[in-house]
Image (cartoon, rainbow, N blue to C red; front, side, top):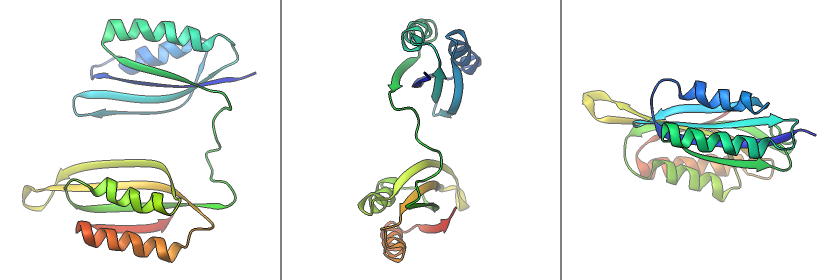
Length: 178
């Protein structure tokens, strides 16, 4: 029986962290199934999905994680997935769509747009944001969200609500099929 787990880690960025974490997974006779890794500020952050046929994989990964925490100053959290991972494609009653937002960087953009989605039962699959220098040097904020829109959701109502939130935040928002 395949055992599934999620491992997340964060710590000061430096070369070799991906090698150390992936070696830990390999040394525990597990497979690295999926991952997201990035640098945020000065820290490296990773979340990965692993699997193994070994019943003791969680214990083995936990022991190795403690070593990496001590040696590299990482904070690591491991979570077993009893039911295994969900499908990467939405269920038959949901459509995969994309929401993008852009405008002058200010507090509340993610909260406002995501609240509109949540109130309509739209599930966020992936979300990325970035702030870059805009015209004249002012910060320009960009957000890209992949969402699952349930069939019961009125898409026209969702688009109108996103546009109203965009007007309130003074940003541009686009909603498209993925």
